[in-house]
Amino acid sequence: MISVVIPSYNSENTIHRCLDSLKRQSFRGDYEIVLVDSSEDQTPVIVRSKYPEIKFIHFSQKTDPGTARNKGVTEAKGNIIAFIDSDCIADPEWLIKISAAHERDEVSVIGGAVRNGNAEGDLVGLAGYIAEFREFTPGQPRRAVLHAPTCNISYKKRIFEKYGGFQKEYYPQEDLIFNYRLNSEGEKIIFDPAIQVYHHHRTKLGDFLTHQQRIGKITSKVLKEIPLEGSLIVKNPILAFFCVPFLPFVKFARTVHTFLKNDPEVISKRPHVLGFFALGLVYWVIGFSRGIFDKE
Image 1 (tube, rainbow, N blue to C red):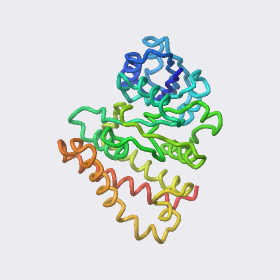
Image 2: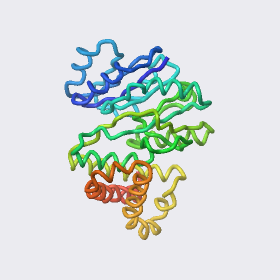
Image 3: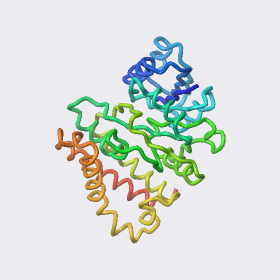
């Protein structure tokens, strides 16, 4: 059995698309949907009235996605836990391919690809997609990875029984910390581009920039804890002083190169999106710099 776990906060504009896509799955095996919500909008009303068959858990106060996912796992009955976000739409064969991948591969974690789910002319949303998912697009090869996005990843339930769950203090990079721990314990993570979801990103420029700054700051915090690329910079303020000014250019070049190599149409059809992406990088670096000197 597969348990689909969805964290949700103020999702009234997107939750119906997510749940409808899960109800339309071509998968004929057993699966359940567990929605863990802490919304202050109409999300609970929508879910309870239109989707009474799903397992709905509501927190009275705003809850971070990691805590919501942990709660969903404890309530799940399946031996496979599949995560998707409330602003995502699952491909009709999403569960079929997750089930097949877990049967085929001798691994406990399988991540999938993310497509841009925003409208054609939404450049801010596209910039968010480019900023966050360059390594996890459909054009990327199937391979072993250190990490995969939590909006499209599945775990054997035993992983949580053995290693615990996500740490909320690292939001929005709590999944990176968790997956790094799994790798360090010898648990292999496979990226399978055939397993796909469409992700709807922030459409307001201010929200996009604020989120990029938040990601940059927490990335510094994460790199202080785990030895990934960039760890030396965040642990050495003098080195950071000389290196950080070049980070926007390095990240810009790497990201554009990756998309042009694997999914060129994302950029070639709307090259002016790179202006929004570049602005987002500036805010990411501001957050990253602040995180270096954050003592918390």
